[in-house]
Image 1 (tube, rainbow, N blue to C red):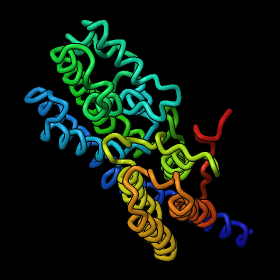
Image 2: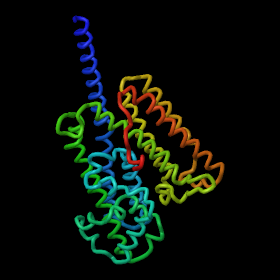
Image 3: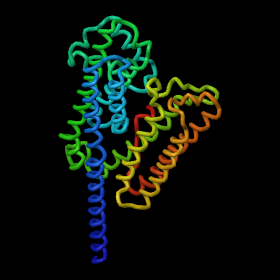
Image 4: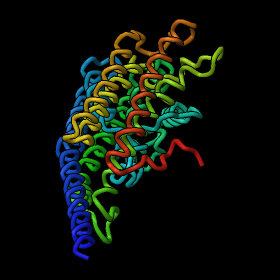
Length: 338
């Protein structure tokens, strides 16, 4: 009996220790990854709104710089598409992509042709379809001559300012929701909340890590690569602004930080993951193809495949080593289909 009691006590103490470690990792992820990233998104998006008010011209260097900085900040947190990002469809309102049916240009053309007065107030513009809002709608207005030329200059200016202001408001709401509400739910899981245990919180973060890697491999790279013999370079994300490869790099750098925080003080695991990320980032640096135009050639496609495989290798490492070490699994994600 004494032996059984001692075994049970040891098991309980072990569980308590594991739970404490999970809680510490959650705190580190929130304080060093999530909340700073959301603050940066809010700050750069506010600056984007100011830049649009100061100069709404599509070729404004200041506006384009502000756009790039805010979009960088979004890409760095775009894997966090749960909780506050799901509320009021904020994630889609900031970034409606991939746009498989070309709804963003259609929506913008419709607004411009009708000179829709919906742009006159923030409340009115918030009712516009997510296809006509966010960073990718603004990219078309700033970089696509087919969208930046039709209609009156005054209306395109008003539309540009409306989109930028809407991005700023949405980003501010997203950051505030994290800071004032959702972070506390993750720090203190329990009955009545979205998470019952610290391990469930870690599983959420592990899931967004693996899904973020999948988005880079299968969407950011896979869409323009298309099928062998049928490349689709025009499907590359943010190709008009020359940011396709940049988005992969910014995302990988951010996911690398998340992986390190998930690994915690497990030096073997953190070293394994860091090496896998370093390899992929090296492949991205060597690719030298900003918009993946090279996938239209056999040599260019091969270089893209090498990067895609390196990202896939990170995901394999995460599933085979990090998941078991954390006692979690990736679970279902939106890319898995029905």
